[in-house]
Picture 1 (cartoon, rainbow over the protein chains, first blue to last red):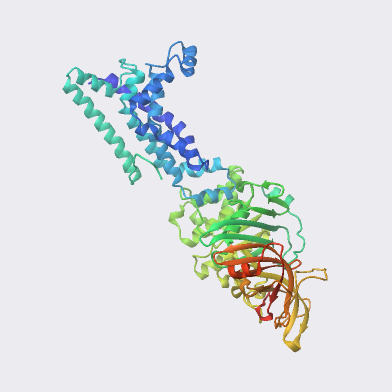
Picture 2 (cartoon, each protein chain N blue to C red):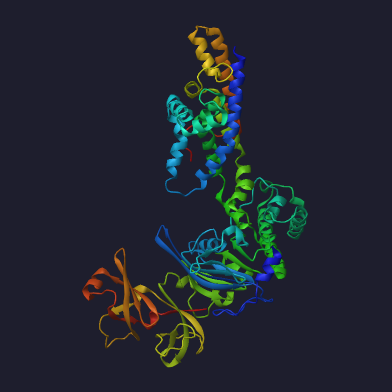
Length: 224
Length: 397
């Protein structure tokens, strides 16, 4: 059992799902209330990581982080090293990879708030942003917890993106699923079994929380 | 907020179309003149209204689908009219000519919808205090406790909406709207679900509140009894148009005149003034339009009703009861033959609606496709509109 890889993975998942609350809420807000006619394109782009092979996503992230891209060069000038094959790079890749798992439950719960409450709030002198903060967010608690938990669990188990972006550097980018892969490669089945079981249990617990909280099935797929 | 409202209100001028109805001094007025078209299951709905509401209760009465809720939504800023103007206490909230459209949350119009829309995650007191967010915490508490006491809700302060009765929820919704001291109050059937005693005690509370605040209260209902119970003034709405306005007894029980319900569905409704009575032949002459001075204003000979020269009423004529002629007809029993010009033709399924301008009054005339083709009708063509005396239906206003 590789505890170093386990805690690194938990740290990664916690950072990513926390950041996704901050990033996902504005995106979900926009997706819920925008009347832009091309909105569906943004919806499709956000949902893309659900269907895209992780290696494809990982490949593009790797290119974007590399020293040939503007982002990579900017980071390099700032820190002196590239983003690829670092923990920070892993966070960026995972943010994209788990984005729909946060945004979709957020948007679904924002959209489920009775519009008459929003109208009432406006009549009582609250701007749309104030209304969002005082009415929509508190009534979307279950959706926020769901989005947090799903993106946490999803990041916990990622493999393809991590391998492409982070490689396999112990203590830096070796996550638990890569560790399992390594152990199987070296025919260390009993260790792989223990790690896999731990990941299974943690994932099951997280999903139990989600479904216990929502009391209605949340499907990975198009919302509304 | 309250201070701002007082500086902006001004004494209202007397309304043109109805007597002042308020029984106490007038301090605030709502004027609405809007048009809005939108698709509905029957085709296109046309909301086209112009009215003033003074401080006190004004009842908006009409069947469902008359456009009452759409009208309130436009006043509250939750829906945009196509054109027109909405003025409250002297301030333009909406003016299509000036391209002015104040956002709903800046309008300070109280709106209690039929579904109440209490915030389920907040207690009764938090609901009531919600609209007072710009005040200090102590001010907020004292103001909301005061109105909770006024509406006998003090003991429910800490309960959520799900934990109180329907009548109590209605009180909370009303208190929540009133505590912000709105410049006008819109009530969309807020009493529909209540039993009679609850209803009348709530109305009494509302009346008492408005004695101090004197704002226009637009009260939507389709219950005729509520009209008599509440109304200082009634506006009768039918398929997007105002078909009558006045005191309840005038509008609801016009003697020997058609009721509003009977007049609904008439395509041609005109304000008119009685200019002559012909008791010997059981008819009278009505001049269309109110206070018109032109000598050539359109006059119609209508059935005689109990009215005096100079009194105002409404004349309704069904578009299907009108005849069109391309030459001046002679030897005709119909008493009204009006020269006019076709403004436009609109095809609606198998009928043609011809809009004919007869010197100020525009008539809608329904024809068959064959009639249009046989008479070669088109915009700009001179025609005569023939109106039988007994096709003119009269209603008080």
